[in-house]
Length: 452
Image (cartoon, rainbow, N blue to C red):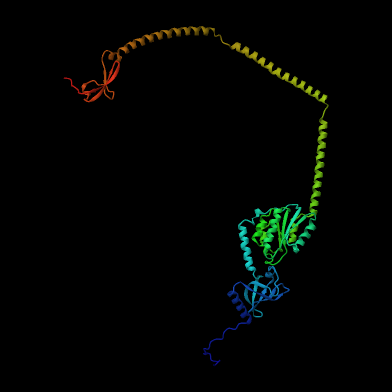
């Protein structure tokens, strides 16, 4: 090949990239190809750097991979893994460019098997929440001054010592009743529920603490039981749940009336400190003394006021007599003045009436004359009307059809009541009505003969 020949058509050389660029491209390719997913394995070579980042190897029987979990994620892990721990990590596959090492960036970590337990926890929580066991309206307030505290836990548990120490420090006067039960292991949940039911049935305490120390989710699993949840919800007295540490949550916490971060916190919530009791009592004594002193002072002032107003009975009777005489005099004057005024006005009105009273004697004479004339005129007119009525009655009697019928005549009408006057109005085989002087008759017509 001639390097000086300008017409040489050999292909151009491929671009050259750096190792850093190559590793970055491979890292991007891995991150795009493998999304976040859960990976299980055994922890090996665990190191916690001064920066707070975790470095370890995740391996199984056939392979291993480097893993890093940065401080921002590690602080929410809830536990620090140890050599040989079986874990599950949610990680992003990537490449550490500085060394060119393939690794995984861990965003979440949990003990192996916790995933299935957490799913069971979530399913039970949703079921009991739908049943109303966690509703805020079911939560009961704690008694202000509990005298007896019940504790459901193991007699060998460190949590019991913590609770007893806190109760002795805050309220040594409070009586404590222990309802012993295993807090982990086989059949522990049924025994915890039975201990809660026993405390509820006996009704010996004012508040009940259900507690145990911290541990893994497996260690606390006895408190994630449906039977325990219903026992807590149906307990007669308020229940405080102090299971695990501050970051631990169980079904018992949600079903209880109050959740405490730790067993010690549960004891502090259950009782009021003795010092607070004494301070409250001292404040009540001070308030009571002030109220009694104020009531006595008011009573003494009232007594002094009534003493000043109290008079000798004789003097009081004399005062009442004097008041009575004054009232009588006032009443007498009050009655006389209006009466005299009314009499004067009556006399004045009587004089005016007499002066204006008309003379009715002449009018009475005129009225009597007119009454006589009216009576005479009415009698004369009544006589004339009676004579006219008699004449009209005589004329009417002459025209009365009944008199005509009595002389032998009859009135003939058809079935419709029309008066028949000519034979032409009669029809053969019909009936007519004949009215006589004394009654009437229905007459049938056989034939009609015309007038010749």
